[in-house]
Image 1 (cartoon, chains in turn red, purple, yellow, green):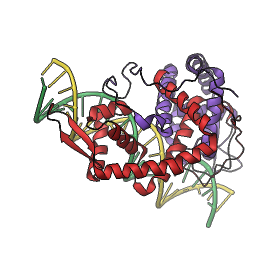
Image 2: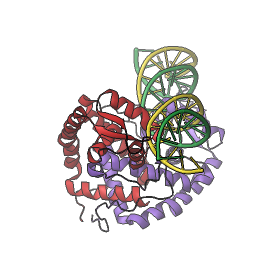
Image 3: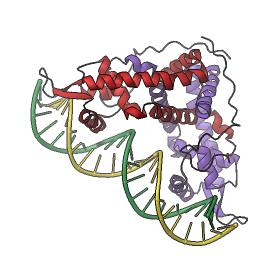
Length: 170
Length: 170
DNA sequence: TATTGTTATACTCTATAACTATA
DNA sequence: TATAGTTATAGAGTATAACAATA
């Protein structure tokens, strides 16, 4: 797999509409070794991408975490909360208020499993499916398109592969 | 720039010492479109890298954020808090307790600027420099070495370039 | 005894407004 | 008036222990 159009990071052009980082950012110190620090680069990129994601789906009022739950429910209808939490790497107690919110918005439903009455069978509602469809469209046409313009779809794939490998094996 | 040794993400081998994600994770639902979601991949990778970073510098009790402040102070001695916050993308109020902690550990000092008595001149102490030196060594020999074994230094550079580009231009 | 969902809780991060002392 | 550092505070996100219902 080949990566082109990737140039070494030049940190000249800062600024961009007064981001969360307080203070104009036009000041900018020298990053020095910070620019080679993997965790720092990952964190800054992740925050940017989450911000853009949230802006793109703003009309639907969906967080990245909620969107990921909807995707899992679509692909794994009838799964339970422990499975969702385990797959997404979040803790079961923290999933509860999240599902409360989504259920109160009629995006999904919890029903007692008949085979194991301890667990909940999770399902998307029609509204949940509709919202998910609209969200996918927004993400695709706004978020991903913009990203591919920045890096190209080939580099996108290389990036995703590396990130998945890091999350899995590092 | 060429990227090799990067294979498409195969999500077979999960598990890895019971990570934060509760529930064994051996259950694992199908990720489906989630595996192509940039923000999800970034977040999972970032969490892994921060975890490993923290483990590697555990004997020094340094968080990634504290380490980045130390690096900035080394490269930009005498800078003020607004510059640090602006460069790192954190808010000035949130930098205050962080510097309190580092100053109480005698890693750095705040002194009033003589030219502008509103701002603080920040400097590393000898102990701060010593800790930073040890931290760099730990990061280099444990953290980065392990990462280069995973992806190779060429892919590492490609990844850093892409992440920096995302943080800058996305 | 072990597991599912839940509650309660605490600790960290992040975000905003407002104060003080300087400029 | 504007800015640097600070305080107070509120909201996310994340972490652990323990409980009721069920297996």
